[in-house]
Image 1 (cartoon, rainbow, N blue to C red):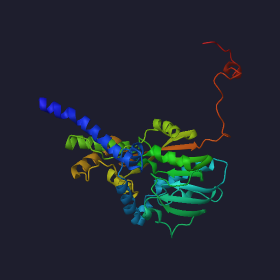
Image 2: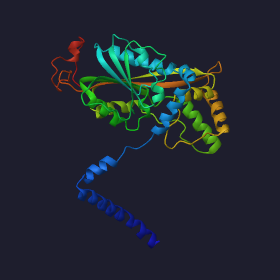
Image 3: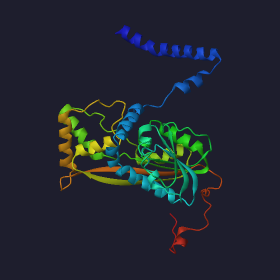
Image 4: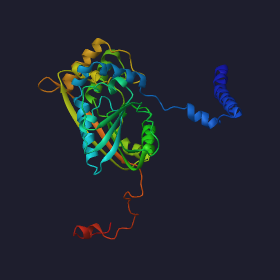
Length: 344
């Protein structure tokens, strides 16, 4: 027992000494400081397997006909993002889309909104799926770029949009900070991503089936951002005048298996690092029965809820409106609404 305690007490000391020795080596090399080395080698916590996600998108887009049949969801959200850009009474020369996919946003814009759209997507197969078949109202440029690490010069972009891609990003604050740096003063960022209540029917059905069949819960559906966290995320990224709203889109499917097939055809399969490589047939069939029993419609179909979080943020600029200091008001609300004011 004493030997076990001594051995475990020594571990923190040895790890500290090793880190100091390692740091001193980098200090003595003269190339970079220990702090610079630690900051360079420390990466954000990896929730999603980005390589697996790129492969999923490549595989989905390579099946062109099946992929186009499931464009309905991303096309609809892209149209709603375009409506928000249209609400801004400006016409942009160039708009950059981060995580463009197969060009859903490009189909929703016209020459009254912009001259050129730059589509950035990490999957080259997705990016070029419609390169020869689709005609757009604006000039389109395609770039292969990982949306988690956008590479643009500082203060070079007037507007950046992202439609249904950010929910697969590991370092979401870092991505948005890079976007803010790339925007010019008073430039706008408009984004849309799946929220935490998306596919709650599928999530609960799979969890109940896992508990029943295997006695535990597996990571079948990826974690998603909560709506309440988005305001802090926008502020942390340095964006001001932020606006966040939530919308829900409910799609009916014949069964849970049809829903899963459509998600795979969209390239939206599970890409969590700790995901299981397969799901047993009896667990899948049990989840399908639970889904229909708990959430099923009267006509035998099953609903799938997609919660979409829309966000708008601006890069700070002196011309933007700012709140007045506290206590500077000159008119009471009682006088404004022609009622008797009372002191609390």
